[in-house]
Length: 315
Image 1 (cartoon, rainbow, N blue to C red):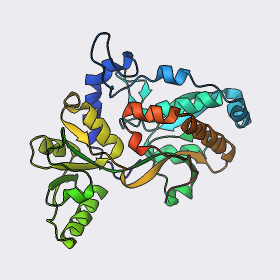
Image 2 (cartoon, rainbow, N blue to C red):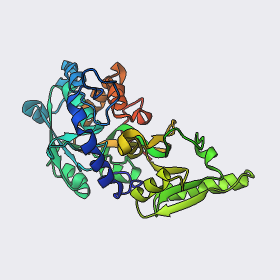
Image 3 (cartoon, rainbow, N blue to C red):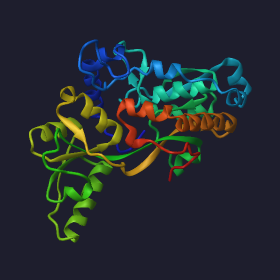
């Protein structure tokens, strides 16, 4: 899981789900009959996933145990919207990661069975053979690569969130000079804002006033009331907050690639290279045929799309 992300925003995100849960049954855009269409914060991608055809060659490359069971045992830490979280029923995993996992499974001709585990036990669950793979917004890093292998599926990083309509005209880091920016205390968001402020003054521009608080919820309140011009947050959470808070009327995300981005990776035991490579090829096939992009777009996180399902591409 990204070290950038604060646990404090999770309650806010999951609370926002309640307002949007009814959209799950309204089709991919969450629209009801006769009503103006809008993109849902909780899309239903069942129809899209249903169009995926099994690739016999890729299915044939699976390890015998997985091929015989026709099931991928996937471990996650299901609590971080929009990556992976529970639907309104409290038991069905949803999220863009869940949709991607289902798509990979469909391409390989297997179903995906979720296990909800503590984040700290995910790597050991792979090493012990309890599960086949993990997918839990886990950063692919050189340190973790010493223990497991990764197939990268998403690039996260710092994203700028502003009030709806972007009244302060913020278009990127360089336009934060002279502005009041909120971050959560002790995060890399705070470190980046401080470094960016120094760049501003070195260029002869006003410094950034960095407001550090204990939670993203506090930052949202400050942004809504205009006490700060922007919030720094991780890409997935910033997108989800902007789509759910106030029915999507409070905030928006500044377009552009994530700042200081790094990949999330599906994890595999070092001894399971055969499964790793089959999943890599399945994911790459979904990237090539456009299914991958459609899934990310439906969740509003297309800014984090990768062009290649790299193995151990993190640093």
